[in-house]
Amino acid sequence: MVEKALNFIDGQWSWPKGAKALASVNPADHRDIVCEAPDTLAAEVDRAVQAARRAFPAWRRTPAPERAKIIRRAGEIMARRKAELGRLVTRECGKPLTEGLGDVQESIDMAEMAAGEGRRLYGETTPSELPSRMCFTVREPVGVCGLITPWNFPTAIPAWKSLHALICGNTVVLKPAEDTPMCAVEFVKALEEAGIPAGVVNLVHGQGKTAGRALSAHPGVSLMSFTGSTHTGTAVATLCAESGKRVSLECGGKNAQIVLADADLDLALEGALWGAFGTAGQRCTATSRLLLDESIHDEMVDRLIKQARRLKLGAGLEKGTQVGPLINERQMKRVLDYIQAGTKGGAALRCGGKRARGADVARGWFVEPTIFTGVTRKMRIFREEIFGPVLSIVKVSGLADAIETLNDCAYGLSSSIYTRDVNSALTAVRDIEAGIVYVNGPTIGAEVHLPFGGIKGSGNGHREAGKTGLDIFTEWKTVYIDYSGKLQRAQIDNS
Ligand code: ADP
Image 1 (cartoon, rainbow, N blue to C red):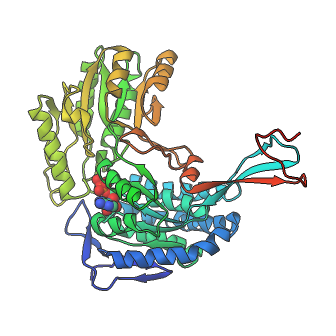
Image 2 (spheres, rainbow, N blue to C red):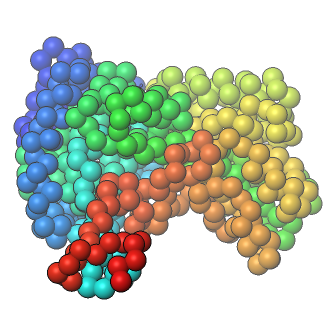
Image 3 (cartoon, rainbow, N blue to C red):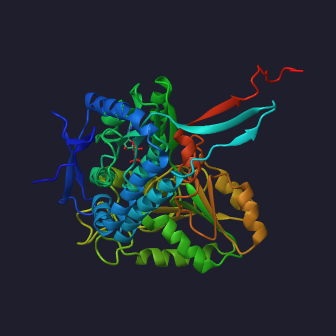
């Protein structure tokens, strides 16, 4: 019997009547069905939104430190269950177990961060221009938050969004990716066990075009927070504009790592391998372009190819696996199409380039770590997000050329520079067009207490996580208290 991933609405687990079943398949072995989840239709999404609306008044009045206790407990529950949850993440989304455990750890870290905010959620006090008048600001929750999440961080991204939304006093309806419903179920179960009141957190499974769209268009939802492709993010933002909602988007990237002539090449090599092929390149911050100074280009390329060929592909639960599968067949085909486009466009395929063969990987969606050299700015593999283990290498000439090449991009999420020169590093920090810059580290590796997000096509001006994540999920209320006992008029001469 295949396990069922149920919806969670108003504190009850249920399978919506008549909903089609969507299979969640282990991407490393498509014989292994992790679970079936319902393709929730609009009427049931409506029931979830109504439950969240009913729960909102009491939750927003619950003192934030009390809300924090529940979030902290949920973090403790996940910490206790980390080993089991990490295995589930790996089984359902394919990433190696060390990364599966990392995904759960990120959720635990986020619980710690959000719970801490329960005793802060600071506003501002400021002097008034008038005597005997006090001015201050308070954060207020927005209302019902619709959260749409991708599969590549199947517990961490739901945690990022919902725990920040909840600590601020919002109620939520989470629509996780159809590829990883069971990870979302386990995350919500931790909140349930921690004592979250009925209706405060609701979970609806289903495809983007059914459940996702219904949630984005629902008039009872005040805010949508979305992570996924730029194309889908634009569709969600359009629905939000039409129905008058706030929307926060965290979308794609085409992240580059620069390596200058004076860099520690061993370190830069290690960083490029991890940034490009960690999570099989399926991170929005993955290193997709490597910009090598001409003086070290050939040496770095040779060493990279040698090392990339040695990376061990396999199921994430197998010991020693370094690169897991792609999430599904559609995504594998998309990546293989990009590889073809690279070759046709005139780049030199130097490593990988095919679906992986061999007994270990025959039943999964594995693509060999792939490296192109001779990539130019016009090529699709330079410009478009691939979301797979494909690295495009470009030869550059010095710092200014490297930065200009990096910035020639429709996205602006993450970036990295390897150099030993402080002036070069700080020039790059100043001039790179991206939300995140790493110096002497790869393009991946965000921490939950710092702002996360990008510019250009990578988002719409918000920053998740950190303190800035609170700005997404709150409205400011400005309060003036006049204790002068008389009418005082701002900007008017009162003498
Ligand atoms: P991916 O990140 O897998 O490339 P998407 O950006 O399409 O793909 O998916 C991210 C999330 O957006 C998933 O939860 C998906 O179900 C959802 N989604 C896809 N299409 C839509 C849509 N038209 N409206 C709302 N949500 C969608």
